[in-house]
Image (tube, rainbow, N blue to C red; front, side):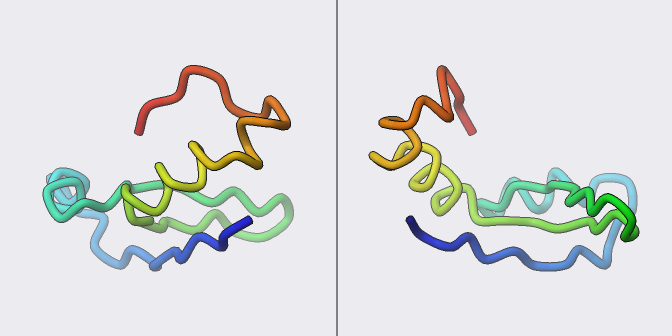
Length: 67
């Protein structure tokens, strides 16, 4: 299975999510249990590749997901 590279988001201002999406990135939040939440962004293409990979699909981990 591939690794997904995440970038920490510094700009959380209004409209920053739309700017990320225009660049082909997906804004997200990584919830860390006892650690503080982290605002991140990931490549839409890379995320789609992982979600649609044979490993995810064969294990039934993903159903009817679009990014």
